[in-house]
Amino acid sequence: MTNLPPIDIRSPHIDGAEVSWFAPICNGDFEYLGHMDNQYKSTWDNVSKIVRRADELGYRNVLCPSSYQVGQDTLSFVSALGPLTEQINLLAAVRCGEVHPPMLARALATIDHMMKGRLTVNIISSDLPGQKLASAARYQRSREVIEILKMAWTTDHIKYKGEYYDFDLSSEPVKPYQQNGGPLLYFGGYSPPGVDLCAQHCDVYLMWPETTKRIHELMGNMSEKAAAYGRKVDFGLRIHMIVRETEKEAKAAAKKLMSKLDADHGTEIRERAQDAKSLGVSRQSAMRDMSDMEGFVEDNLWTGIGRARSGCGAALVGDPDQIYAKLQEYMRLGIRSFIFSGYPHYEECELFARYVLPRLKTVSLPQELGRQPKETPLSPLGAGQRR
Image 1: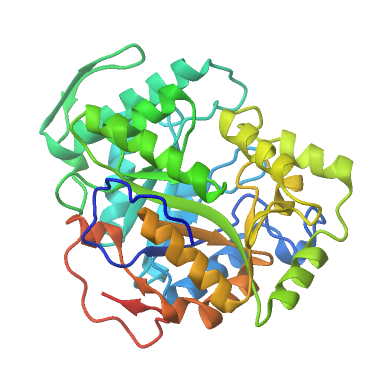
Image 2 (image 1 turned 30 degrees about the horizontal axis):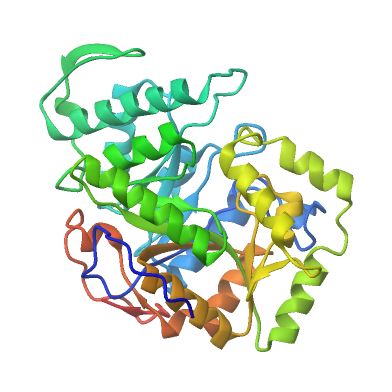
């Protein structure tokens, strides 16, 4: 256990966490990492089954990512799943600049009504397919998109002039279901322009796995930046999960996952992503360089997955008590949202729900932060303790 001081966060009153799963709509599901198998291919049938199961098991949100090369369309996927799920929120990744901002505001508001306020939005600032912009330019475009979304959702008129967009039009059709500003905005980014954007406009700062000390440093920096805008943010951690009855079994599962990976193929997988050269990806690479011979950089934090992923490149590996203790440590730092994934996703979703989820008090951040109406009692399908 570390003795790092807690960070000034937006929701110190919350004594639980939003526990989320991941929808592999970008062909990122495997039994053996990097070894494609058609039974795990990113299809509507395969991935929608994972999300519906996460809903039944009591997870509180699901990240639906965005990738042009290998992915299904995120907003189409989320809008279709809304009526097929009952309790779970959906976190839709939106690549800023991909959709005309007033029409994006309308689309998101429409989905929010379809889901009765269960929509959350992950702001993405990566390059658009076939286009390259400098980091500062990409984040400025994202800033303008966010400002237009907020104006569309909270006022009757969009009057906006920026570097990328110039509008003067009514916003009557685009009010979302959620109150007090519309869907929560989640954001992940490490460059100074990205950190500044999140500090000014977003609600949850998502981090990839790093050592506990480095996570604490990132949180402290973001908290200071947000304070300069008179704001506070909450914090989330996106990380993979391998939990088994014993630590020995968990490490064996990690070893099996990597057993068919060719090093050159792993490099090709990492470098094909739109964000392969980003600062965040370089931090994941640096963490792997710090790890021991087994790939562990600190207790139960294993970096092997990063050998074939450009983004989130580490997993928690251990028995239920070890994983629970690690999550409690993160929560003491001030982390209020976890986004887990595992391989294969359906099976690991069930294993985490069996071994750890019932021990956690889980919350819906939009409800806790006053965006959604208070929930009706949950069905007995949920595995975690709920507020």
